[in-house]
Image 1: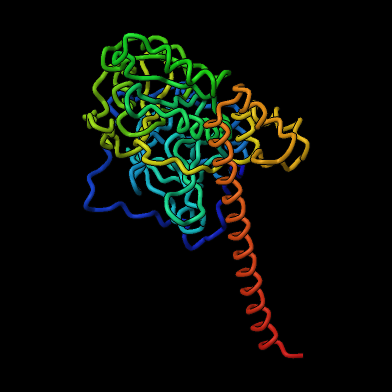
Image 2: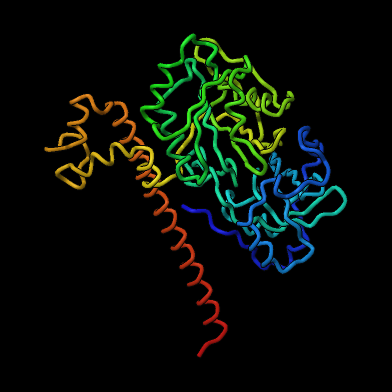
Length: 392
């Protein structure tokens, strides 16, 4: 499921067409923490990885620019010279059948700048990306952030705290290419947060864990140490865990709106309604994303194995290679559960996620088969037309 380089189709008739901005929506406002002036591209997250794509571009008038804001069909990019409102070249929009391949926050693009505007001509291949399955019945991926170096998985130490949900985020993060870090926010609600930290350490022994209180501004420096020039960090988590408050602490301004949380179930409102990237004083960039009501997996068996390596290591000594770890004889995994060495809830979580990934694979195979049939059918129609006009 690796992201592929995006290639623009040679649709000459659409070369000069841009997607019209919605006249009902005002122009994108400047990002308050991003100065509208010349900046070193390295400070914006530029890496040598992108250089080859730029050098191979046939159009010398195009320059690299990074997407800082994406709100429906509206984009804001920075090309190292200034912030610009941007729109998509028509062929990029209409020729791309995978919505996840269109620009999103964090993407590097090739743009044609003019005044304070720009036209996005192409999207450079992504170094890393955090995907999820699109909500609903459709089997399509949705990209939440691109070209991120670190992903902060934020959980709150209140009724929202859920180790099983953290496992789900970790599986998705394992396939993103970014370094996962778990942020346990709202530590001020407990005199001793050791129990929560211990629960997380059992399921993520090799992942950094940071306890903070965004509200009390406690231990924020431990979060800030992950930022340096050119490093991009994305915040992910459910609504109400305090992502926006943490972002405000890091950038030193009340950039992001914050909301209240219901006391009965710790559910929060979506105070962040769009994805946006901001500069952090002292270096680095932060991506805030809307809270996720659900995270449907878009991952693979390798990512699952990276997070549940303890179970997969035990499974190697099961009698049967296809052991389901249920009632089979000589199942090393069940023995570990019976002896108290493996939490039964963790095993159930592993089995649930494995079934979910198997279903995803089957649906992708089904979609690929339907697309192949459609192509064959269209090719057959084309050959009939050719034979009809060129009889022997």
